[in-house]
Length: 255
Image 1 (cartoon, helix red, strand yellow):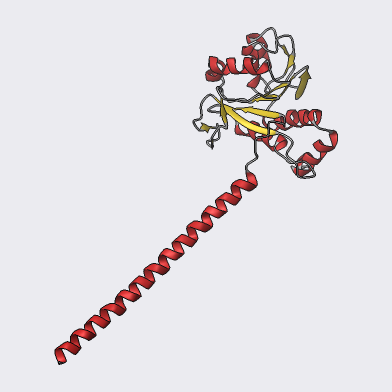
Image 2 (cartoon, one colour; image 1 turned 60 degrees about the vertical axis):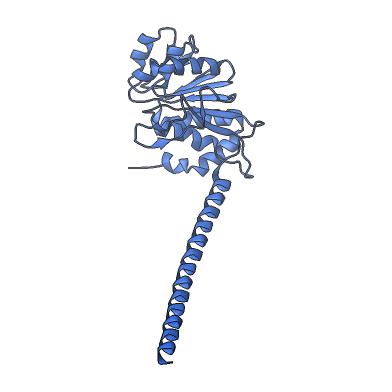
């Protein structure tokens, strides 16, 4: 009888231990599920808030990208054209384009995943051509040159910043038009592409000639982007975007 009672106590203890263990594991699983659900919800909300839908009814601004690109020249254009208007409406599709879907590594070491490739790029209203410190590989990449030529046939505007002017020169699309490049690069640009009307980069920051416009690049890329923005929208919207970017603070910046 005593033996039977002891065995029953052992069984009861084991049952209690099992119940506690199951309860702990259940609580842990519930916590994990809650955390995963929260993270998924958070990611969904982030995507819904920040990803701009591609609207075929809107003008499309294309940002050409390639390895070694100066990311500031790409970001400047995106900064300007991706801003919503004063009523919170999207005015443009702003997309990045590269030869392949592989991540682009910028001069500064950041990675960007292109939205489209040369093969599936939609129709563009404007194409922005940025620069790199070493343009040799890009100027000698026939696929990039062919892409620029092809897009010139459909775009209303072509903009180059800094040494992106070399790609414009190599493509031949702006022969006979005024263009400016990085400070100190004009002489070589004119030598390489004599059909361009290269402006004096020591005194000219931005120039427009027909559908083509260009700048010295770097922060001057904001000038070319804002100029075209005003042309495609209004002076009021340009002023709104400049205020959004605090450009007045930069212009009034004193050492």
